[in-house]
Image 1 (cartoon, helix red, strand yellow):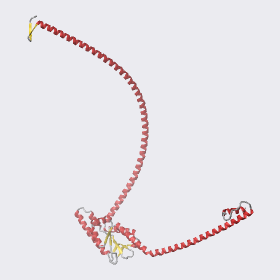
Image 2 (tube, rainbow, N blue to C red):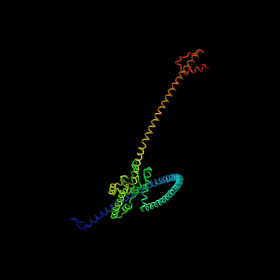
Image 3 (cartoon, rainbow, N blue to C red):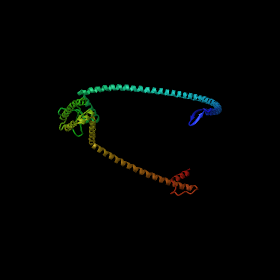
Image 4 (cartoon, one colour):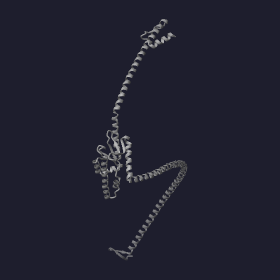
Length: 397
């Protein structure tokens, strides 16, 4: 027992010390085990209490859940009833709306069918008009081709320009103010001669125009071809202006100027726009280029001149008629004066007749006063004529 086992520092450890230490260690371990067991028991009790409390909470929740489930079932049943009622109302409303929609759709379809029928009818009418227009266009294209063929022929084109000239002149001037194909003293024949009032010299108009040159100028595909066509146009128009000046400007027989009729406004505009030197050349040669509109304007001017000349010719006759009209007015004034005198005489006669009637009334009143007793008679100078006549009528009765 006293045997030393080991040294702990400077203190020797014996077997007895070791046994005592082991016993103390075992006792401490036993205390630790007992404490652990007590702690585990206490923990188990707490867990049991917690589980009991959880069980109570779960039971309360289950009860609450059952109650909530029962309420939910009641609400679901109520909602089912409400939904059934609303579903019925919805079905009825849907049915009514479907019926109304079907009715409106039917009416819309009927109106659409009627409108479609009307549109188809109008479309057929328009198609008929389109067919007529197409036929008219075919005829017009044929006429245009015929006109093109006519204009491609120089003689036919001259006849066309001359026809336009004759139509403009004949529509605007009196018959005695113009003449077609007028023959001059030199044997030349002008297309139209316009006679101005008080002047025996006619104003001559030529309707021939070199249209081939302007056509070639318009249809020139290249600048070189256009330049050649421009040279040709200047030469043809210049030669025609020179021919008109030589043929139709005769001193003492014709007017100092002549007109060259261009039967197309576009050709006339193109000449003025691109060939001003030709216009100036014609002006210097006393030849005036006129388009249809300018010729109409010239015709209106001549028409105004003719009207003014006729007015001057008829001035003496108008003056004589005015004198006769003044004499008739004076005669009418004298007759009205005589009629006024007759009216004055009639007024005097009526006044005298009224005076005689007043006298007769006053005398009748005096006679009535002598024969009957009654109220005094007013003075005769203030007695109205009507009262006197009534008194005379009463006395006579």
